Length: 213
Picture (cartoon, rainbow, N blue to C red):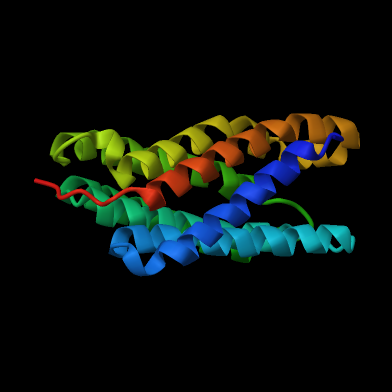
């Protein structure tokens, strides 16, 4: 298999997560339905980006405009599944701040010919700020094993991907401007994290929601 083998594995896992979301949708509660919607849209977004790249059409706009949707959906999932007043306040503040910065950035600094590194990095920090309290309060209030809760898998996936991909997304434009082999080699980190993220999301979709106390 070639250097893009990991990409195709990651792509397959993204599609698989979307399919699980569709199949399981009717049996999910509201919080995990939001996760299903996120997985479905992520599969569509990645497919569109992939097709555009094959056609040699710039796909940065797709990536840049998907980011606020992704953060909003992660926030919604954490808000609903954590069910704790502190977590909900943090999520509302974080999402509101990000959307405000995104709107200002879109109208002042945005360059559609490049990946928006500023918002990419900010979104990672915002996700970390939301997931840490969600996991902390979630493990304190969930009855039974927290590892069997959808919140555990969603929060862990979002936290690991956000923290692990900071370096890669921060240098994405510089990497894209350099040798293709270097870009692909470094981007393997992002694909590996996305693969793990998708597997954790699928596990979250397959969990039975647990009543919180």
